[in-house]
Structure formats: C-alpha cells, structure tokens
Image (tube, rainbow, N blue to C red; front, side):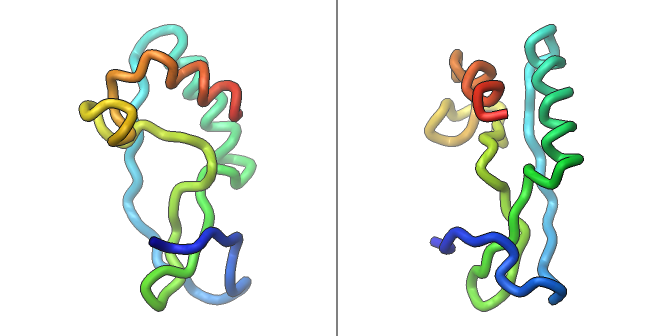
Length: 90
C-alpha cells in the first residue's frame, strides 16, 4: 500500500499510467462526465504518490468506476448510489 501525498518531489519526473473509468450512457452519466471533465481540467483527478521506490500518478480522491463488473467492492457496477456519491464529491 502506498502512502497518501500530493506531489512528493515537485519538479522531478514521475511515472504515468493508463487510467480508465466507466459511466452509464444516460442523462445522469453524461452530466457526471461534464463534472469529471471540469475536475480534470482543475487538476483534481489524479495525484502523485511515492510507491515502491518511485513517484507514480494515481487516482485522486474522486471515486471512479474502473470495472464494468464486481460491484462497489471492486470499483465496478452494479452500484446504484455511485452517481449520487461522485456528484456530491465533485
């Protein structure tokens, strides 16, 4: 487990990654996508954490659904409260 941090070494290189998240293609999902885009543009989507001897980009505090299945325990669907929760955070 990696500790929480902002940018642990400002101005120094860090490791990026590929990040995927899923929203339903309906009115509420589309509204949430607009809010998530604004959060991204404000630099709130990701953070940099030291992990395993290197600085890495990780998800920030905004919850994202990273799996289509597996339910809430695996950051997936079904999760009937997700859209309400993420909008409250945003």
